Image (cartoon, rainbow, N blue to C red; front, side, top):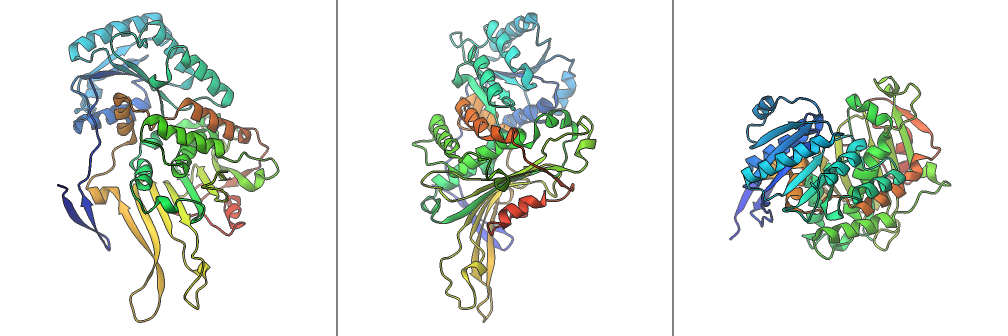
Length: 485
């Protein structure tokens, strides 16, 4: 029997009903983290594994073996991660065959010690230039062979190529040693609770899916705003830019979750099949209207950042208007924007509904009434809000916008876990639902690539602003405006 708890928020009462938990516990396995002494491993991967351990979600038999070229203070690392059991380290040169022979021997030893049955995950927290060589050497050492005892899976961090050609080349190289069910391409945005909640919101509630289409929705805004500049990532960023860093992956993946059709089931490939259909339905960019659909910008002072070229033409901001040519979304614009050194760190998806067709209130036109807006807040505070029109208290007929707001931390009494916890658990479970498939990467590169070579003006904007004024004008030309968090 379900339990229900009544909670109070600011100006709001709501109940939390204990529901169904679909969480599984993975079978025994080990994890090898390449780049264990690097920033990503120490800042994200190891703490995520510690979080899973504290929640009792790691398998009974489990170990972590860090791999790195430099010495690592394992005792110091263990002291910072007291809840992460069975942590080991192996130093070696990634380009030396002897390293992989030593790795194979160590894995056999640890598998016997912890009862992992030979199941192993290789996490490549490495620069993309090392992906092929490390995968090749793992394959040559027989560590990726699915015919041996136990399974093997490989996690790749983005970026997956620099353009379509390099993405295809990387895929060919990986296929020499791995089958697609072994490959997990990490996009940490897909592991965030609010992002996953888009699927639950749409497909577990009967009241929303009937209105989730062009008949009722005016437009959709997807914003991924960052307050900081490029910082220590300047060397990488100047050769990448915002289109490669944010749009080809995070932004288009968020768009697909909002726009895709209901899958036949929640099986991984059924969910991912529907994403592919969205990417294929995106209206290609046309040179004739490119300047009206895309705005690129660069924050002032970017070229003075250490590691950035003095005459860099790299975009640190982009805003674009996309269209999906299918029955559900024809005529509904999707506005996407992302950038560095903006006024506030904030990521959200806003679904803006159409104005009422007719106003019953004599002094108010339909456009005087704020449109209903459903917002999925992704960061920094995760939650969902819905804005409706309502009568204000008093004898007069006064109408105002009322926002009903749901906050994860407030509602459930705990903060959402880091996205890496969710995704690492899925890798252990063999669930690829939240991991982009190769054909999806190819479609998103195919869509974004024309912008990489387009002759578009690079607009300047001040650090701490909302981006170039031209991005505001793009929406104003259609009678709309960006939501400002």
